[in-house]
Length: 524
Image (tube, rainbow, N blue to C red; front, side):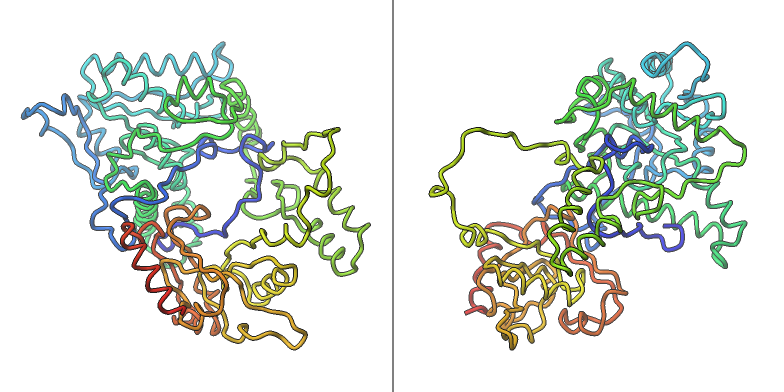
């Protein structure tokens, strides 16, 4: 983000435990999952239609929005809800007469808890607004060895909801300065639960520290800061566009998230309007986690940061579903055709700690058996199986072809994904195997779609919405665009390929009809 001004890009899929299931600390933002619209009307593409997406943010007393009053012009207009350290200080100095700062930390040894502190913060916010304060700043910047901070998402949502209940929210801006806020999703959650502006108060110190160590080499410091801001703003545009929203003020306080792993009572109290289908830990459980992490963080003056392991498997770190030993056991079982080794593999999987919700489920035993005559044959059941539509390029050519051969052997279907397919695979191999994907996908990027491609399938799949990468199209990093991939996709080697968001491709039922007509014409 700091080097390129772009969001960090990772592989699809998350095989680390859900936040509620892990034993390691995760920020509160990780319990929130972004909502998205399968199709938006009008469709919005945050990359190609950036001109219609606005992050402009108004600070001040909005008053009664249906009245025409000159006081409504007495506002501060910002180009973005993201405030750098110097921008926040400038605003505080310029608006000091109408600004109140509220501390969201408290002493560790005090006889208090999260609930009492939330009530204190809400009470201070109400008193400030009734006293004429037009700008509230809630902050965790006073955190230290002796003071613990509330999660700023919790504090922000609590204050936002409390002011709404008391008909005070439009009379003040709610500004957040947080040391825990580092990535785009954290910004989005803070704004989604009601923050007017967000200042990531630790980020610039981290950048400065690394800059002094010459980690960024010849890049100018001010450029590094602007790159970070640019990457966050780009990410926010993408996130709001997933819901068909083009102005950040429509996303603010909209609570466009589903919560996974927080108790329903806590959600009802502090995140009203959001769903928490499976419930989870409550306020006391959250406080225990924060206290445990605070103790770990400040137990020594010379703390070596944990390497993490959330995104990539690391020894003695976060649990992952796909870890080396298990994968090796499965590969060995298949290579040796050893059922005993396979049973050892399954035993290891079933005895591992839960990672996803499905790991908490078990089959109910039933004493009522089913007559085998009423059960479909294996060959019939196999016909309903379809491999995931993962494109050639995202998968290696060898893996992509092997999947197609395997699915064709058992009478099932493989899905080509959106990256086209090598014409060599349209002919059977010498041993009789069929390496051609039975299902050919047509996506918004139209990568690899030719008349020959359309004529070599038993089924066409048109991607008009996407659950795996909701609201945005597939992205293939440049280093994966080899000579073969570039040839199949009619693109340039080494150049990153990004599809338009799928919901941008189909504007109406008439457009869908036209796409169908074109595909049928070229495939017949």
